[in-house]
Amino acid sequence: MTASELVTAGWTQGAMARKADNTPCDALDPEAKLFSITGAIIRAYPENFAEMYHKLYEANECLNLKNGKFMLDFNDAPLTTKEVVLEALKRAGM
Image (cartoon, rainbow, N blue to C red; front, side):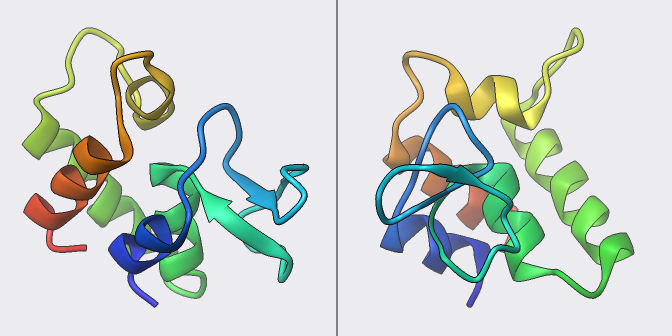
């Protein structure tokens, strides 16, 4: 699955990923069902970390995140919605 498909299936804030019962978990946990933007990228590219980091960088570029803002800050911001995350992933080709 792509990062966009993972977020479409279930998005979360406050954790990289969550199980169906909303318990936080690792993005690579087989029971993970909900994903933050970072968790979705990690899950979508588990065996190619160079590509994963490249994709993270692309997403940061298209979001124009500056001044120490990271993907988790963006994902967990109060005004960030699933739709905003999906648009960011779409622009980054994920």
